[in-house]
Amino acid sequence: MPVNQLPPVAKSFFTFCKKCNADRYHTVLAHTTSKTAKIKCEVCASQKSYSLPKTGSSATGAAKVSRARAGSESARRSSHNAEYEALLNAQESAKEVSYNIKGKFAMNQKINHPKFGVGIVRGVHQDKVEVVFSDEVRNLVHNRE
Ligand SMILES: [Zn+2]
Image 1 (tube, rainbow, N blue to C red):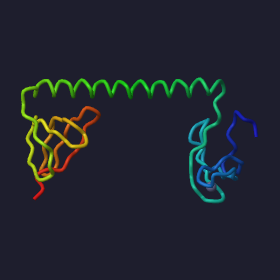
Image 2 (tube, rainbow, N blue to C red):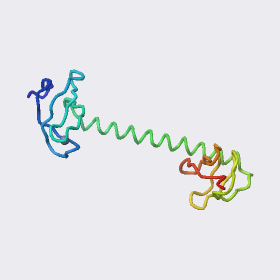
Image 3 (tube, rainbow, N blue to C red):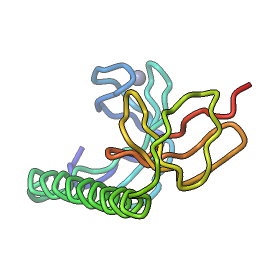
Image 4 (spheres, rainbow, N blue to C red):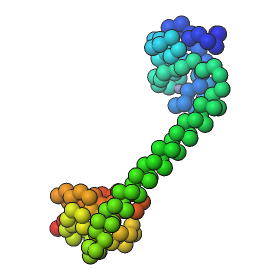
């Protein structure tokens, strides 16, 4: 089959099946766009969408995607750090309370957790508190009878 054209509906073609982890014949169920089709593996019957391979350098595209991901990860991290610093500064003079699942914690309370370190409560629920620690926000159990 030509590489720039989808195989016709109801015809089979050979392509990789992730579920079988092998090359399998797939039946074309429908064309979803001019470049993508809904296909079904003839062995495991899993359905998936198939896209024509894009022309041009796919390596460049992949590099761009991973850079974009790294960027959003570090942005997320620095906004988390900013929130943590701000909360910690706001509660600078507050007394730290040791974390215990039987304890009952209040909004903006400064908690000292044996494993996660110092955190600030930013949300209180019936049996859980949302605590901002230096690395991430965690939901901790509290008010447990
Ligand atoms: Zn399969």
